[in-house]
Image 1 (cartoon, rainbow, N blue to C red):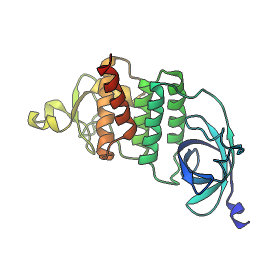
Image 2: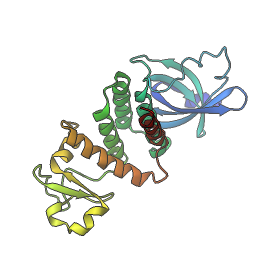
Image 3: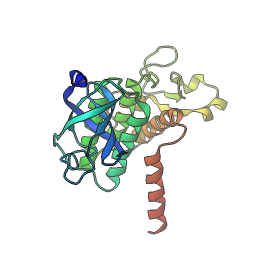
Length: 247
């Protein structure tokens, strides 16, 4: 079979999404370490006797082998690499959120080992239930790796960020010192302390205020790139509203 000459073996990957394909197969999206986001056909994966039924699970490390020259490739083998349990309860929504960001923001077959490593790290922490700061680090690594994050290590004059200053930020612009920015423009972006910008860059968020500011910043940048919204975030907000109304 000529396609077998294009076989990729034992590639670390995470399952992002699945959907039925034809009678008994699955069309799956995965994010691999060395090949980026890949679309695969898992033949007969929906059959009860298929060994893939218990292996193709999201949020845990997989080892995948596939072949094919077209955009839609054929899954040849899948193995579960272990490492951590499936996320539960609210952590499950965080895992869905992470997968959705990767699926919506990355291009197919665009390799990014940095994104794969960030995905590995954040899903590992999500499974352990201690992941709020890791979500911010993941979001920032994703935006930075894709080249769509502003450089928050320096201001608009290429001066290093001062932890004692506050900065005005908006998408696709460098940070501007609040002292140098007309107050009437502040409502068009966010005011973030230099201390938080440095902490986010160094993956060292400590205080609740730093966490809150980092959340506001990454949310603004993601909403700018995904104006149609983030489905998993919307579902979680609806669930939280329902719980609050009934407690």
